[in-house]
Image (cartoon, rainbow, N blue to C red; front, side):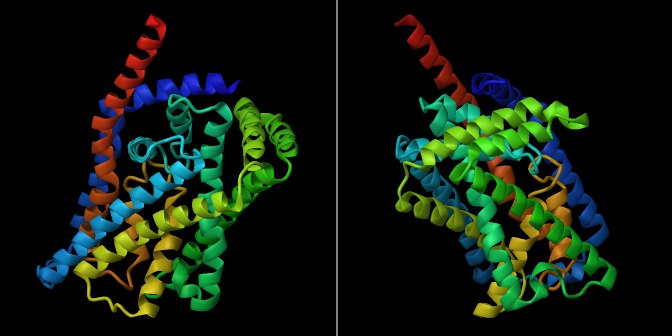
Length: 362
């Protein structure tokens, strides 16, 4: 399958994505789980302890500020990876579309296919388009796989699971975390080796692995991925150290803002110490939680994320108010992109169609 075929397939996915059913399903799943958790876990006494003071509203506003910074950091990364072929305004718009596509896709799949189509419509070369999508995967993966073991080494195993659960739960969380961590490490390393060392060998490997049994259904996509890695590798050889440093730093800022945003909401509703050690532990716990969330099978992690939140932070957040905090968090960081996408994606598509008609007329 050629890159052009993949783009045409992704175009259909974009058109399908703005259907009401594709948007309402994750909303219903998420709200359904929040409602169930409120019914099972909500504690009026814990809720009554919340003081709706300036402190609460300050940290809620702070979380919104970090949401904006996160978006701008992703836009900065896109601007760097595109070699500034996109304006700041265009980068901000495209990140909205990228986040929207991620919100309606299973978290374990992501919005890469749609991103490939979106970028291809913005007059980028096939090589540059492949580079942005594939290198983004590498940057996101390595932000986790590099720093998490360091935090665990210095802060202890409590950073990857609650300290107030039983031994069986600890084992289950620990096994799940390290399993997903090593999956992330494996595919991140595979992508890294391909684009910086030997993409042709990885293409042959992907083709060979998917030539047998039930894996044959992914053979064409695997070969296509290998071809895109070859294009990306050629692009990478032309880039300076400053390019890679800027891309990684913007990635680190964007992901860190995801965690700090949630930290701010926890601080708003729960008495949590603001000292450096406590905040470092909370930051790392949230980072570990996201390792599990990344592999969610539901669109945008809907339902799964809300459930994991309440059970992963029991030593920070009282279980009786966890559904409320998780709902506000998802309202800011998830539903906002769903609803923004409903407005932005159709307008963007109309612009693309008008551009095509203008090109044909001329």
